[in-house]
Image 1 (cartoon, rainbow, N blue to C red):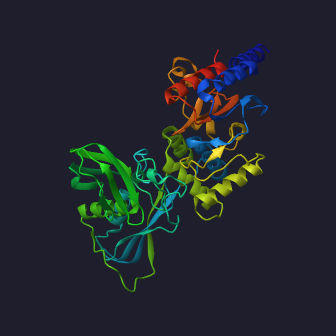
Image 2: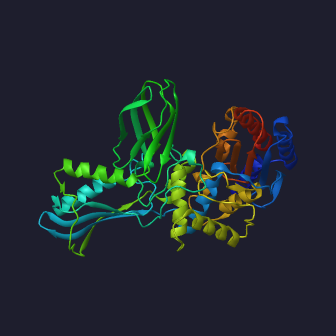
Length: 466
């Protein structure tokens, strides 16, 4: 009896420690919304009690605003519900053709499965597919390959980039496309030396055969460099001006399959396995499975992408959502599935305008009400383990400079989102056992982003602080 009393007392203290005042929460939101810098802003804000589902404080909760990267929570949640947190992407590698002695009379074929993590620097403990293929060939005693290393791109249709993305984003290390075969985060180092508009010793590291370098730099000795990406060529385009110096820039790789094939050929050559790179006529229909490479689990992928706000990883999830429900493996079809799933779970999706998985498209919009309803659903759902709240990062220093001085730095978990004129946060409180969800989406305010973040800090402290 005493133990039961103590347990009830502990639960009561836990709930009271996390309980918030609706009046105080509304006052904090109203103070934020009435700041002079918000006069011309569009904003949607909501705080919801997870257990009851009620919104206890809000400002324009039904207004649809640009989401930026908070869209990643919707894509991630949908993937968790549809595919399970143990889901893994698979990349198959086959030897197609007859194996006689130490010779393969055929090709090595890599079947891309849309795995965004293949060769990722963020999962260094996952097996290296290049070493896996090498080991498989060595186990079979193969020393000569008469054909080529071929990539099957059928899993995800062209183009790799999203048509709703700004063209200026496509070249940079956050604007990578999603391919049937992705490799090393679809990034590469672009190195060169500039001298009065001329470039010397241009190279990609690791090497990526097949990409042109198109120089449109002026002769001015000034560091005002811009880089574009020609997908059709494909080619990296240098624009603006460059200082007379060495450059080492991380940019998007439009041909990740070429990088993987080149890397594999180099390793095979170093291990005395010869690839003739010839077209084999009358190829035998026999095939031998060499490797079935598995990605990290979906839970690990989501934990990584939410922490780092990885656009390419999330686009991979949206294509997987489409593929695993029998749809064409495109962003548009994935968005249709997302909409259908949340409608089936009782949410009004009319405020949700989704054009990609990651939020890089400015056309993406959503309301605070939808966000908190979705977060509530994920908190109450018992099928997914770990839960979404356990995969989201702690607030820490992700907002302004005030929150890190309070316990809310660890008591709140959230996903942030930002782009020009957009600042958003969605998340849970308290982190250990969420009782509340919240969403803050602000578009087109006046003043600096730093000041905006500090004001959001003050608002969250006013809502959840003690």
